[in-house]
Length: 160
Ligand SMILES: CC(C)(COP(=O)(O)OP(=O)(O)OC[C@H]1O[C@@H](n2cnc3c(N)ncnc32)[C@H](O)[C@@H]1OP(=O)(O)O)[C@@H](O)C(=O)NCCC(=O)NCCS
Image (cartoon, rainbow, N blue to C red; front, side, top):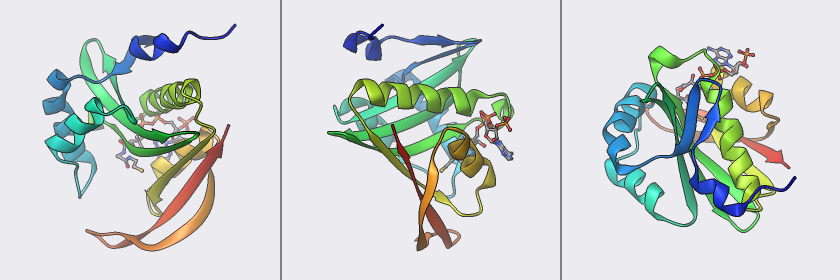
């Protein structure tokens, strides 16, 4: 059965989680998780822009009303770039990253994305395994792609 296009707007129940569009009230908590997760965190403006623009989808995963994680997709035509995926430290290892990523890919597919790409630090084993479990493959090494600390990145790809 095909899914209605306006389903993108709705929250989706995934086990004990609710996954759906992040809203302005979520930004403080998202910034807290971002600060725990990355040495080069996005700014408040970056997240607010991601909520605003048609070409981006920012999802939040809520566990009993608390934002446990978020992820973001930029999409243009049939190409999508996953630009941010993070789960709060106290919620990691419970399958939340996997469910969020699955929902982001599902929504991208509803918007006709056929190719998803992302970058990940070569030493980020947890994230690489998460992406490979979702079907991504390592496409190319990008030398010194990251700063603070300097590190190579894998460009990964998923064709759907
Ligand atoms: C990467 C991250 C989002 C994973 O989220 P999570 O909710 O803990 O992951 P899940 O519990 O859904 O795990 C799904 C799969 O990812 C892999 N994985 C997750 N954590 C792992 C770890 N610590 N070590 C190895 N593999 C791991 C496993 O394959 C796991 O499947 P399995 O449980 O069947 O083995 C989380 O660790 C995080 O926020 N890290 C900091 C931010 C970050 O690095 N984001 C990615 C940037 S590219």
